[in-house]
Length: 71
Length: 403
Image (cartoon, rainbow over all chains, first blue to last red; front, side):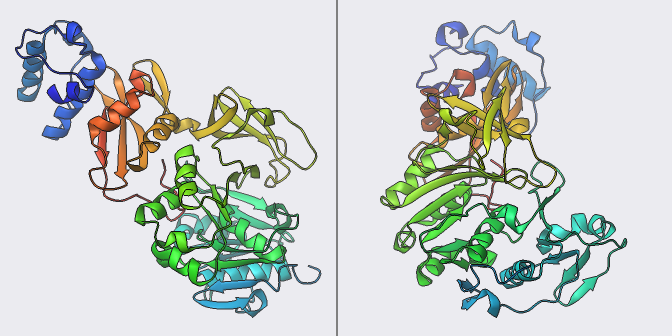
């Protein structure tokens, strides 16, 4: 997430509670993050957009990605 | 055929030897024939044979014949490979003076387009004496453009560079006094990428780009090396011939050219975002308006040809962006030597913009630099979200890179 933000000259706030809307982390950024993870693990991630509705904070994103990798 | 072609006394340089057309090896060709030219000399000799004996001919290369061999034999062609002649499976009369070209096949199976030496000869007025480099694959439309210049226009010499010499062509060109070079943007990007020291020694008065979308960045990069050289770009294809020629050093063509009708000149139009051309230089059976399949974007007073319609549009969560436009923005970054832009399947928005890039020098930019460069010039959904850095510019034998 830090790299995604840095490439846009933004900084990822410390702490997992930061609100995604407030820090400007949007669906395109989430897609980019997912592709970075895919490239890292060499596998395609499969999930539906509705599953993302509950994701509102930085911590939610990190948990979600971690779940995908272990599922 | 009556008499020798007007360019018969022109000099040609091939395989390191300088000679005239008539001094090429004499061929005895059946008709209709496909000549599978393993060397540039064989291809030129076949072109000379056509210009002096007529008949029905298709010139191609070993890499392209296999896909079409059976089809061509069934269509009545003998296939000539060196001393070996394969007889057709169906016999028919030859069409007099018919020249066949194969489309590049970049969007599917290559198609056969009928021309004649006359319909391929698009430069007819008197020209300043020049020595042209011919880097193209024998038998392609671009190759025939250079070859017909040499055959039909006195004072237009041709220096052929073999495919194996492409990497060092500036050395060959300087040695043989080449003053004019025609190549694809990928050819020119690759040349600039290899370094400009040898290139700057070539006394060029004419640089021509064609065969792929031509962006302002490549024109400007060439201008920096050759400040006084005429730099032109040309839109040409097997189907519509040489239809657009622009000499003002800018990408795209003036919007005022759209819809303008004049005798013996192509009429240009845009339908939706597709370029449509009615050309006097068209292939057989292609008279009238031809949908080119190429996508255009109108920017201020220019019409830019940005890419193929069926592959150019990237749909990012319902917002559409032209890969060609994104490529132009990336290519304009001072650190970028070459770029390819494409859609990549992604969660959430289904497709996002991704790119492959070759830098002019290692470390000239990183992913963040290029993303921020694009973000300042494109809508958010058009910014490449994944950029892969390649070590070399990929190029096919057609001198294109499927950007």
